[in-house]
Length: 428
Image: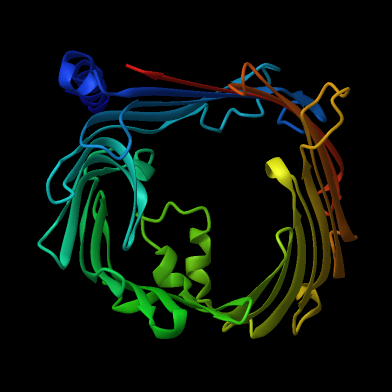
């Protein structure tokens, strides 16, 4: 039996299980979400210059079950695209993808959870999608664990599925209100190549309102640390402060063998190591205003460049989601190519006069000035404006937007987009 036949069987089993078990379906909820996006732009193709590109995207999400309650449930999310201009612009691109589709069972005891199907994993060193099974449960009062195994979705186009596999686990020791310490492991195989890594993640709640969050991953193939990411969060009076530290060794982070499908995997061969140290401070003023300051230092080992980014934000928040903000940033590098000035303003406004046929307006404007010209251009400009209206008791959201940009990569680029978002929920 081919893999796609197995996957169809899983899908059908999920649907039949949900509708054939009265004790599950009777208390369940059905939630459906559809996002239809029509984009309009011009691009050069292999056969024509400035060809019209009119892709229409459809995103569908379906959830059947009762959230946060024991029982059986089903979850699906995927997208598809149709090129209405029927040119060759998308010939080498995927026309659709099933992002996740799994059945899930949550038990009444020990926080037991089981998922079967295509799913995303974000735990410990796992940050990927698999076609397989994941199990998790409490292991007594102070421990919990999870295990998973299956096929890595990202490698389905790399020499087929034969010889592919992924499995891993995470075990955590925790004390409520004090800390959570996790140790994790993952192995991915793609034909004769494999990638093994281990990781440690920590959440610690220290005295005086100081919280520590951290993650480290070790490449077991090279016995080198691939990543360290740590941050503190605490308050000094009304000011929230978040100092952070990150270090990436590209060769071990991205990998250089056939298990590397990350779009930035080419950086693995650069031998680069990046260290980031920074601090963010947030000051709320009253109920509406927020000031944010950020200082971040980038240090590149191979490039021998140290760049410092300074930024400040002002945010005003009103009723019903209304928000206006502005940001100014300065990148000051040791080389001219890493020096620029950025200015950005944005807004989302819902408090409009009743006579207008729209319910909200969104906008963004950004300007970047480079010290060293890129392809003969020493600046970038971007502006976006959108209007929308919620209909059918807010179940349908209709939005029309337009973007204009002028930068080193496009002399002038004008794009338009129409989005229809529909939400439906029902007790079964």
